[in-house]
Length: 174
Image (cartoon, rainbow, N blue to C red; front, side, top):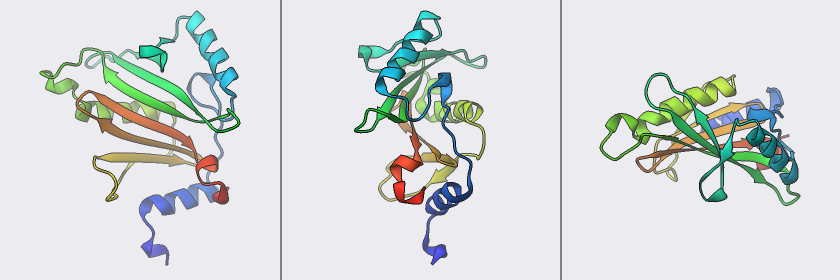
């Protein structure tokens, strides 16, 4: 029966059963921070000049200095459950100098830079490609214990990533 399971399903089950448990995220955010704690931590980071308000006040913005090409803006915002506790992060990456006529700054190139950045922030297992008929674009996933990161392009400019606590997503696999 196990041979019928996808690599993704097998990895989730193995990591949830045997993998380490992760609570801490970038910027000292943690799974289960309340929405109020998330805002307080972001406020302190903003006062220190480490982050700023993102577009339309919908994201937090962090500027990544990239030596090889252009600077990258990393946007993020907490994903909260019904009890207003953080169970993940929605993230976006985009080159600051992006334009439609700069092929080296398109999302298909940024995808691998974003994955390298996320790998350095969240070390452990490598990203692997996920194939599923419901996915209409190249999608990669990284699973370490209870922490999952899904990454894919979004149009020509952006790379979207979602970091999730699998204990919330799959409560029966705790």
